[in-house]
Image (tube, rainbow, N blue to C red):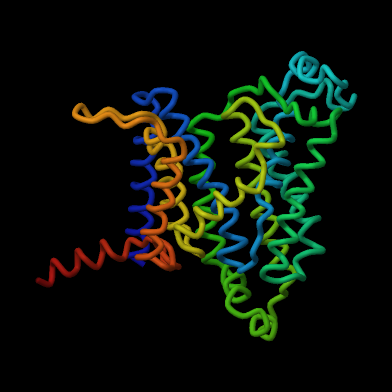
Length: 347
């Protein structure tokens, strides 16, 4: 009991220290660095949602970008002022029931998540009977269908022109605040009975069903929660960038999130958080390789695409040494610190 209290206290101290770090970064970082820091928080949310589906439940979904688009467009249309909507929809007027709607950001954010979760539920219900590659192809197809629908519904989404002039409401408190809530939620979810059922389905569906686990109920629950988090992440991204269009939500965006999940460890919350921060930061830091470099004694001309070559090589090295991802299925625990303290006392 005493050890559990100590662990809870250490967790609260760690969260407090991280909040202090956020305050320091908020005051010292310039706008470019803050944008990268915000992106790290958003990718943590997105990757946790996909890891719940792919990692913990064993479903292979590739439709995350589609659910992000639902969340981003819902939030954008609910927060834009009537004047801004009129400026955006100059080719064809917006549908009347959305023309004068304007709600606070937090309501729009929640609605973005709910609409994406609803889309996930409606799409998941018929396709979750499929398995492995067939499920991946079906979800990838649905993600693309959502994007094509958004491209062709001119009076609802402004079509290929996209939406511009979105309020830049996303800041470090929104992105990392929601990321921390998501991490805590995932920890409790996975440690609970639902988490154990998700893992049982991942390991062996037939055995899980024989144990009395309702496969469809748990699969659709994981898929809906994952889609909800994708919608929240999409809404935060839209209000960070200030503009969205259907091309942003191509399948390559889903692959980036899959990359984060696989690199961190399929079925590890800790690995997902570490991987999301490392990959997002590295992708920006390596941009210097695309330009010309002057080392004083030698000048190297710009090589477009060198950044992705180096990034891919680094990924290959990591995967060669950590074939299960950085953390595998392991999680960070305070036991290591407590045990180390005990060992020191004994010696």
